[in-house]
Length: 354
Image (cartoon, rainbow, N blue to C red; front, top):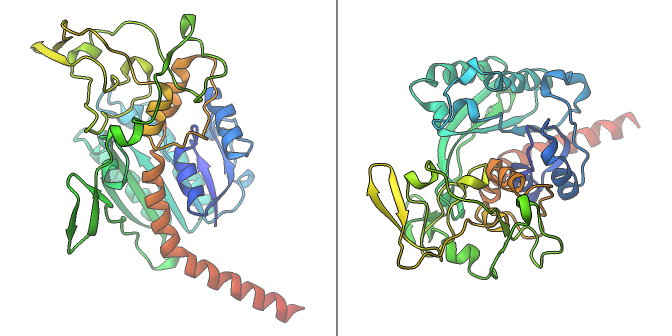
C-alpha cells in the first residue's frame, strides 16, 4: 500500500509504516536540518517546499496520508497559541490536501496539549472538518510504553477511514504493561521495556567536539552527547531515571535531554529546585544514539547533522517507531483485504478489455 508523508521530520512515523509493508511515495518537510537524514535513510527525495506552496495536484495518489503537523502551538510547555499561531494553522493545510486527494485513510499525531481546555474547541473543529470531507474518525491518547517503547510518552493520535470503506478504526490493544500479565481483554502483556533493555549493551558515549560539533568515525553512529551546563529550568525537576525505569519523554532539544541512568541522583532542595548529590558528582546527558534507541530507532538509522543539537531535535520530534508500527499494523489488517479485492477486480476488468 502506498502512502504520502507530510511534516515528515526525520521519518520515525514513516519507518514504522515501512516496517509493516507500506511504501512511501511522497514526503515533505520544510526543515533543512532533516533533509539529509530522511533521504539517506528512506531512499526517497523529499519535497522541500512549505506545505502551503504545494498544490495537491503535484502530490501523487496514494492509499493513505500520514503526518504530524507541528506540535509547538498545542504544547502545554509552549505559549498555547494553537490555531492562532502560524504553525497551528498548518493542521488545516493537512486537511486541505486530504480533502483533495481523498485517500482511504489518514493518520495525524500531536501532543496531549491539543486536548487541553484551551485548545479543545479548536480540536473539535478539526475533527468536524475531517468528518465533513468524508472520514470516519477515531482518536485516542496513547502511552508509548504500552507498545514497547521505553519512554513515558503520551501522544494524541487521530485515525480516519474514508466513509466509502464503511469501517471505523479501532486502536490496537496494548502489548505491554507495567507488570507482565494475562488479561481477558488484552491477552498476554509483556512488561514495559526498561532503560536497561534499551541501552544496557551500549559502551560509554563520547562528548561532542568543541562548540558541540559532531565526532568523526564513531564506532556506534551518533553515540555522542552535548556539552555544556544545565539551566535553571532543567534543574527545576528530577531528570534522572534508573536502569529499571522508562525514560522521561525525549524532547526536541539537547539541553532538555534526560540524564544517563548511571548519573548521580538528584535531590529536591526547594520548590522547583533540584541539585546533584554532591557525594558522587557524576552526570551526563543521554547521547543522541541513546535517545534514538529510546525512540526505538534501530542503530542502522543514521542521523546526519552539523551540530549535535540538531541530532537531538530530529530524534525528539519523531514519533517512536514501535508506536508507529502498532498503528500501521492495525491499518494493514483492516484494509489489505479490501485492497487485494480491488487489485483482483482491476485485473479482471483489464483482462476483459484485452
